[in-house]
Amino acid sequence: MKAIKRRRLLLLAAVIGFAGSVAAKPLQGLTVLPAPRPVAPLAIADAQGRAAGLDTLAGKAVVLNLWASWCLPCLAELPALDRLAGGAAPDGVAVMAVSLDKGGAAAVDAAYGRLGIRHLPVRLDAKWEVAEALAAPTLPTTLLLDRRGREVARYVGAARWDGPEALVLLRALADGRALTPAMAPPPATLSGTPP
Amino acid sequence: MTGGRMVMAVFAAVLAGFGFTMAPRAGYGQDVAAPAALSGRFLLTDQDGRRVDQDSYRGKVRVMSFGYTYCPDVCPTTLATIAAAMDKLGADADQVVPIFVSVDPKRDSPSHLKEYLAAFDKRLVGLTGTDGEVAAAARNFHVRYTVNAPEGTADNYTVDHTAGVFIMDRDGRFLAKLGHLVTADDLAARILGYLK
Image (cartoon, rainbow over all chains, first blue to last red; front, side, top):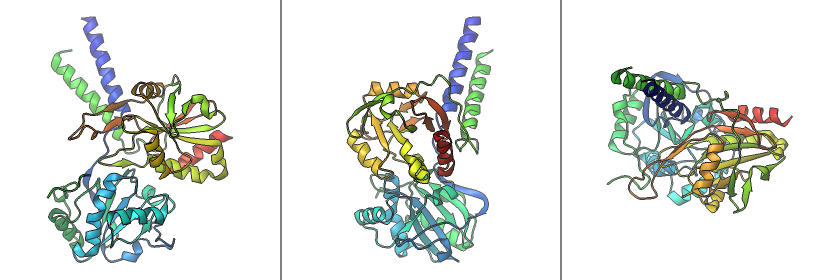
C-alpha cells in the first residue's frame, strides 16, 4: 500500500514538474478585450526614418499587424492584408503592417518584393519598442483598434484577413459595434489558404 | 486515496502547474527558478560547422536560449529581444556572446541556422548537433523538449520546449535564468550587472 502511494506521489510530482516547466502553447486566435484599451503613442517610422505612428490614421479603425521577415506565418498572411489595404477593407478601416526586422526598410523591401506586396507602406519598429509596448511576445500579432485608437481585440497567429468572416469583423469594428469571439476569421495556413 | 480522488488530484495539479505558467507576469523579467546543479555543458556544432563546447567561449558572458527556427503557427520574439539587448549594450557587447541552441537538429542544419540568425544579429551563434548531442545539452540546462508527431508531411511538425534566457558566466557557469518575456532593457541591465 505504501509503495503504491509513493508511486502515485512520484507521478503527481512528475505531472506538476512537466506542466510547470514547459511553456504552454501561446494563446492563438482572436481575443476580444473586456473593455477597449487606450494605446500609447508608438515609435513607428517610415522607410526614411520619419515618424509615421498611428496618429497618421486618426479617425479610422485600424488593423495593426506586427510581422517580421523571419516569421513564416507572418509572410503567409501579408498578401491578404495587402489586399485589404488596396481597397478590400470596409470603409473607415485602415491597415498598418509594422515590421520588427532589424534589417529595417531593406528587409521589408525584400519581403514585399518576394510576396508582391503593392499597397502596404513600409512601417518599421526601428528601435524594437513597438512589440514591447504592445506586449506581443509572439508573431504575427494583429491588433484591432477602434476609431478612437483603442485596442478592442487582438489576433495571434495568421488569419485570412480578406475572407468573408474577416470583413464582417472589420465592418463591426468600423461601425463601433461590439466584437465577439465568434467573429474570428479562420487561420491562414503556410501552404496557402484553401480554395 | 481512491482512484477517483487520485484523478482529481492529478487534474488539480495540472491546472496548478499551468496556472503557474500562464500567470499574468509569468515569463517576464523576473528570475525563473533553476537548479544550482545545472552544469551548462555542451558539445555541439556551430553555424560555421565548427565543433564547440562550453569552453569555446571562455572569457565571455553567454546569453543562451533554446528553440527551433521553424514556427508554423506563431513565432516567439526571444531572439529579437536578445539582439535588441546586444545593441543596447553598445561596446560592452564585445564581452558577451549570444547563443541559440536548436532543439530541432533534424531541420536546423548549421547552414540554415547561419542564414536564419543573420536576420536577427550577426553576433548570434547558432548551435546544433546530433539528436544525442542536443539531448545531452538540453539535459545539462534542464531544458525539456518534445518533438510532436508530424502533420501532413514528415517535415511538418512542432517542437514544444522550455522557454527562457540563460545567462552564463565567463567560464560557462550558471548565473541566471530569465523568463522568455523579459524586455530588452531588463535583459541588457542584467547582463551589464554581470560584466562588472
